[in-house]
Image 1 (cartoon, rainbow, N blue to C red):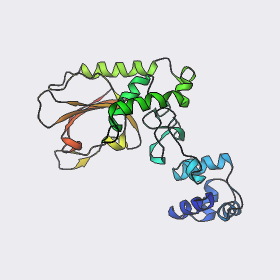
Image 2: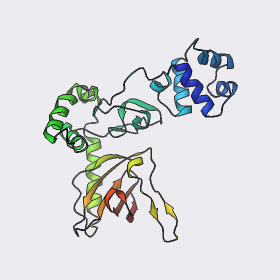
Image 3: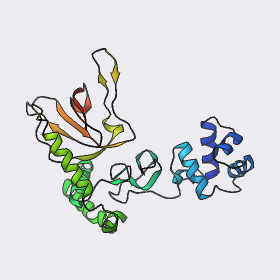
Length: 254
C-alpha cells in the first residue's frame, strides 16, 4: 500500500476523524487530508508521532518500501518483531532478540550462531549448512561491522553472568545448573498459570525481551524447567511439551 492508504486505514481502524488525528500529531485537518489524497507525506518528526500513536514502524507508514532485516542476526523484520529503544520508539535496525530496550544482547558471534542454528535446521537445511550460512552472513551485517563502536565493552555479558550465578545459587531441586541465558521475547514465553483460587494469570509483558533458557529436569519425565529473568526479577517454572500445564516454582525480586 501507499502511504496515503496506510494512513487512511490506520486512522479509520482506530476510529479517528481527520480532525482528531490532526490534533494528536499537531497538524491541521487539511494536512491530514492532503496525506490521504496522496498530495504530500508527513515530515520526519510527524512520522515519529504517527509511529508512536499507531504503534507501527515508520517503514510501515511509508508503505514498507524497504525490506527490513535485523542488522545483528539477519532476521526479516515485521512490526511485531522490531526492537524498541529505551524511550519505547521503534529501532528498525534490529529484532527484539538482538536489541532489547536500548541494550545489545549479543557480543559473541559464535553464541548467536548457536542460537540461530537451532531454529534453522529442517529437512531441507542441515545444521552444518545453517552454520555455514550464518558464518558468511553475520560479518556483512552493520552491528558486527561496527561492533567496536556499538558494543558495551562486555557490560551486558557481565550482567548475564551475574544473573546465572544468582539463579544457580537458588539450588532448585531437579534443575540443572544454568550455563547460558538467551534473549527471549515475552510474547513467546508468557505462559498462563493457574492460581489456587482457580484464576489464570500471566506474569510477563508480551512486548518485553527477557533473558532465559529451557532445561531438562534431572528427574527425567516429560516436564522441563523454564528460567526467565531481567533487572527486576528471576522466575522459574516447569511445564510439559510446548509449554503445556505450566507450574510456577519461584518468583523472586532482585
